Amino acid sequence: MIEVIQGLPAHVAAFRATGPVTSDDYHKVINPLVKSVITAFGKVNYMLVLNTPLKNYTLGAWFQDGLLGLRHFSKWKKLAIVTEKDSIKKFTDTFGIFIPCPTKGFKMEEMADAKKWISDL
Image (cartoon, rainbow, N blue to C red; front, side, top):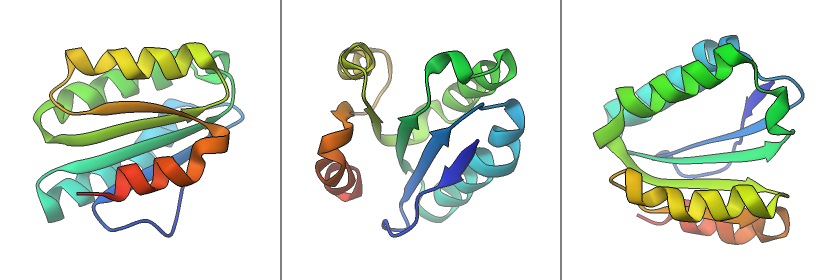
């Protein structure tokens, strides 16, 4: 399940993943908010808090995640992933070489830092 994280600036699309994540989560929650932020601001700061193991992402969710990234490839301003897993944090920190925006991984205990970083213009 994907839910929107409230209380961040309007140029930020922030989400929390818990339990199973499906393509419907992208169609109903992620894609509409990302599109809305891009329409309003031209770019989007995107944060995902992973409160679920990656194995809980269905094949359809992975497909939609890839489409989201490609569809808005030039519209990402910043991308943050918050996780308990060191491997995901490290992957996020190095993933930035493949997309045209800064990326940063954070541990769960760094949530306040993640929110501040993703909120900065």
